[in-house]
Length: 447
Ligand code: GUN
Ligand code: ZN
Image (cartoon, rainbow, N blue to C red; front, side, top):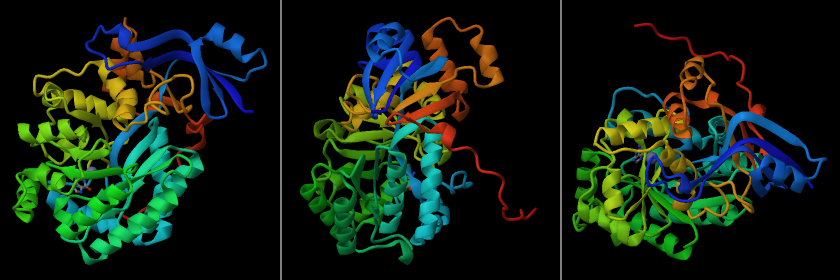
């Protein structure tokens, strides 16, 4: 039996916070502890009570005065784009063609995929993210690399091979049949193995023919317990192109609806330029809109309207969308989310931000019993946060008087330096992935 008691300031959410003062929505324990046994949380409570329960011989990890939260959850990003973050100057379609479809071709080499998968998982963990939903490349080997790296770290990860059979370079195209066959094989190999979940991943309507969409429908019908992910209404040129390829559809959302893809396991990246009808369809089907603020600003895509999703009863989650997203950090992501909503006269409270990164995203994935909360029976994916990790933060924190203020400082000024430790299924991981030493890099060409 492997047991540990983690001590610190415990914060976990119970329901969605309804305002800045909604103290009933969370549980906060100033001298708290989480008792972990064999990768699961046994109990959470006051340190004194948990110590009694665990017994005097228990191994104690004392993280005071840091906060202890559930590990963060990222609901949309692209593992093959890890080395293509910060690609300059283009909006979505040009950016895909100029940078991304070049980068993703490298994943035909299994050794490259394996190297990037290791870096990708370590980067997530350094940022306190313990679960993510990612696209792999079109190559099945990239999915093997992804889940192998996740399994080696014990992480609960969701992912799948992108299917694309048109409007992409030859080397990145499958066919409708190949996409189906390869996806099927990968589901059999990985879905439900340890903590892995498969996401059926037609990239978006532009890169899939009607035949491939039809195959996606079959896959979803045959594997209702898999996730499905694609992109929707991110950019105006994209919308015009997609709807021109499916003239029979009422709008972009209707393309996916016609192929039976909209259900409560469907994740739709971006959902920015949507009509009321389209958001209502998401509400009716339970499909999830995924808000990716750093990406939407970086590609100049537009502003996600969270209030409209709420008003129409549609579900939404938050995500980094690396590599259009500019950071692996969910703290930095929520900083930008706050600003995107602020620009539209909407207000995201600090409690709501931290709820979204944890329990909110877990609920969005239907995984709220396993992850996203510090509660008895849950998996012990846990993050420790230092609100004074940078000198400017430490100075600012001297005047903070409430938990809400501390959380807002963390989200506004924080990044991976604030993550002092991360536990995956009860194992400390951050201290394991030290920054690699300097390596030779290509000489720069000075203009
Ligand atoms: N739409 C289709 N593919 C992609 C992608 O890789 N990134 C983003 N941001 N949008 C997409
Ligand atoms: Zn994406």
